[in-house]
Length: 631
Ligand SMILES: NC(=O)C1=CN([C@@H]2O[C@H](COP(=O)(O)OP(=O)(O)OC[C@H]3O[C@@H](n4cnc5c(N)ncnc54)[C@H](OP(=O)(O)O)[C@@H]3O)[C@@H](O)[C@H]2O)C=CC1
Ligand SMILES: CC(=O)C(=O)O
Ligand SMILES: [Mg+2]
Image (cartoon, rainbow, N blue to C red; front, side):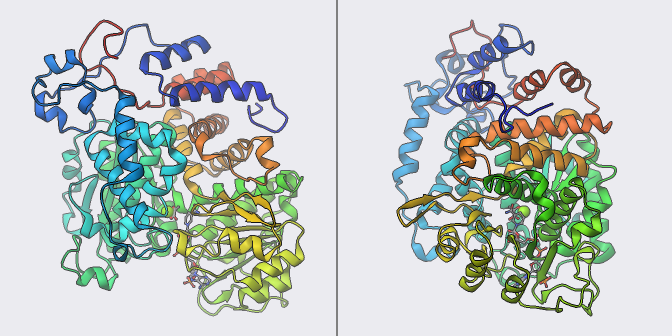
């Protein structure tokens, strides 16, 4: 069925769905939000207001961030839940709390010494804002997510890349209170019982890392837990997972980061990283423990190094509801971005098959992206071998060819160049000049690889070069938007892993887009979770990629924007989830009876189904009161 957002589709219908999202984002309470969905379709609960079951009272309730409302506890709840005297007299509305918080967030009272900020692209003010937000999350999650969702464009770079990179680098110094679970190789044999220490009986999404390749920052050991936390913040804000039903996990198998190992403040194992069969034994036990207690949860593997990322995915993907975000989420993101860029050029998805793609970084992300773009070309009629011949892939040793002496990994091997014309180990600049690619993608995490010379060459060979420096965080990107536009006379269609400002060039403002898997993983996981799909297949990922591409409004394509606006992230996640569920259904992987029913009725019905299963950051009543008393 046609997407609501496809070019030429009914703008009015799309606007109506967006508007109904907007109504929620603008602060309709639970009752109002339900009324909105009631008007639109049959997924309506009754007129009664659900009372949240909370087993705590008094100070314990205030100290539980999942239920705490702080100064917004209404008088009846203060009376019935033994809160009187524990809070200032004045009861604020949630909006009143938002206003107080935003003042602190925007102007700040904490001074951060610039010398404590070591990560390029992250300023002391980013760090201050990150701290203010963390403190709020530790106190009151509902308010935190309300604010994060309503200010997503401003705050995603704070809770996520690039600032989360700084937080991971400094995690051992910043650690104050626990969030998520820590498993260690020394816990071998105990994990199945340890997992029962987690307080939640229901978990819908788990993100796990071993910290071995955090963004482009390398091995950060258990400091890497900041990434599952940041990713799951986006699960909640972007896709409406419930904050009480997510679980960030780090598995400590040592670290090869000498600085951390030698640092007395480091909180993980100070020994060399484990590998080989021992590593897989630990992972098998961990996955079994997590899935044993939470068999319905989606498991996202995140930021595992190249040696383990693909093998772990292959180990579990056929019989677990899991995916690797760096390999698969990034791949779907890149496909959507290239489709978007082709449409900016006035071309259709079909012309993917005609692209010549140079891709720097032959790791988990790079080879995942190459494979999925190749599968996209296969969809347009090429054989897989023909498709792979459109790629030139480089790693730290230069162009990868079949002449490479060291053994190539299974994921790189299909992309190794086979012709005499392709010199083994060729430098990027030479490859770009020789091959004249239409698309240049960076996923090496090595900083400024797209030099002026390379960018100029891209501009010489293409009327509208497509340039995607996708590495993270900001200072590991291959180039920034300004460099790309300057070198190509403002003609680049640009998308980067971490956010870049739009560029002013010769009196024009040229848009920059963000090519980050944050557009895919929340909606993909939501679709898989709601559809109880049990596995996540290539077809579901391709459906997610196409859905994402279709979400770009016509008027944004005219401004060279190749991804949807971040302010519409919940809408995007809903569309991605919907298309993932539809594909799962077509492939016989949709096992949720309710989702199947909604899907069989109509596309709109399915959208409402997805929307109504998204958690909303609004205060729910904690005691039974007549409707209206809560606010
Ligand atoms: N935008 C997004 O959504 C995403 C971005 N990323 C980013 O992609 C980057 C890579 O991630 P991932 O693939 O998992 O990492 P890996 O460690 O698996 O792979 C890195 C690859 O880059 C190559 N490389 C390193 N230095 C250079 C260099 N100087 N010139 C050319 N190639 C080089 C490595 O080659 P060799 O093996 O020879 O050392 C390797 O092939 C990170 O910065 C990460 O943040 C990842 C996922 C999503
Ligand atoms: C975005 C992401 O997943 C990464 O940079 O690793
Ligand atoms: Mg990642």
